[in-house]
Length: 179
Image 1 (cartoon, rainbow, N blue to C red):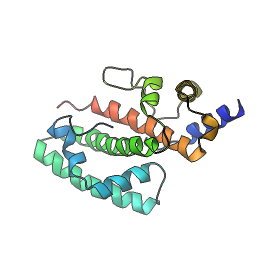
Image 2: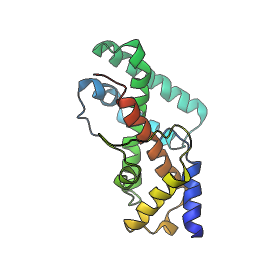
Image 3: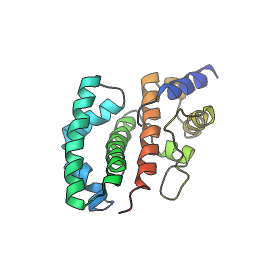
Image 4: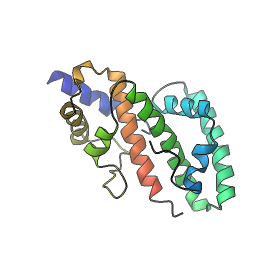
């Protein structure tokens, strides 16, 4: 039980703005397809707690420049520019986290099911802290899927939390984009 609580605490501490392959349409895919792979990796690692504030700021500026090009190319309105940037940042982070967590034999579909993420699903807003119930739902879902949570390092739980946050932003910003 102590390990379950530690896993829950680690998830609660993950307050980072937590894959969908290129298939959502040209407008949704524009930023993701325009960002070089090495930059995507840097963004993903940064949003999972890597790097420092200055490097994150530089990545955000680079992403903003690419986003501005896609906004102009696809005629995205000023009102949708912010949600489009947030969607793109979350999507890049989310896709990187899916791959990274898979290296530790953790499937993100467990989180998606536990928190009801996906097209036409609840997609809870995790812009604030996750509730204890949400954290425990994730932990229990991993237990139920056969993961020995005692062997999962706290840094990995933080990435699970970052994935949940990024997925929340991804789905909630996506529904604001009417194209």
